[in-house]
Amino acid sequence: MRILVIGGSSFVGRAIVQEAIDRGHEVTLFNRGKTDPGAFPTAEHLTGDRNGDLAALRGREWDATVDVCAYVPAQVRSLLDALGAGAGHYTFISTISVYDYQKAGAGFGEDGPLLEPAWDEQMTPEKYGNLKVACEQLAHEIAGDRLLVVRPGFVLGPHDPTHRFTYWVERVAEGRAPIAGPNADQPLQGVDARDLGAFTMSQIDKQVVDVFHVTSPDPPLPFETALQQIASGVGAQLPEVRWIGPKAELPLTVPPSHYAILQAGLAKARQAGLSERPMADTARDTLEWVQGERAAARYPEHLGVGPTPEKEQELLAR
Image (cartoon, rainbow, N blue to C red; front, side, top):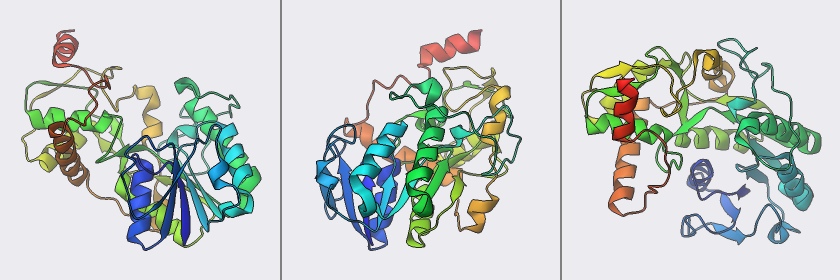
């Protein structure tokens, strides 16, 4: 198949592109050419900006389009208007955050209660889920009979630009004790980007029109078990953890009132072929990747995600 990926050189898009190439598809990437422009030399690269310059897409046709970076509904409309029928089968990468966690119970399915849509033209973190709901609704309106919606939870693994999971991998591997942790029983779900890419491409290959949760595992891991799996993956003994409760400084942590959003049901995706690798394997590969990036001076130090050693000591002292 001829597959167009909007973005495609960063994290989630990168995993989907790699999977598509591995399956023998002809892949075209459309992006601004700023993030790792040398990635995927065998793919076609089109330069543009989905927020204003879509000229390179007009008049072209693909069998499938994968949209990994639409955050406001206007981006969905402008892309699908530019592509028209040339989009083919359309995959929209959404998020588990579209659900109303105050109404969703543990194990909620794809028919769970959604947030109210937001139709703003600018993405703001506090409306992230609401904006994705609006994006989904618009995608259904325009491309409903050829639409696949994928709702990932936290995405983990090599090439992660957020440092959320990578923080815990490096912190455990460092071995310095004690570690400041949230609540030991906080549920945690997160999908390896490579598993997300494989599942997404398997559905595109079959031209599936449906909605799926893509995260892992079900039931979720308690945070304490997740740290133990990370330690196993990086070949370290888990240092003493002091459970200080959810703090904004601790990545991947949420207050108990939000626990339901980290307990998505996966029966539908598993029946459709979702394969989930152990978190220990993801941690091992993430550590190898981040160590290589740091050695090459490519890892961004400005992220500000996760407490510094000094801030961690302050949190522990409280």
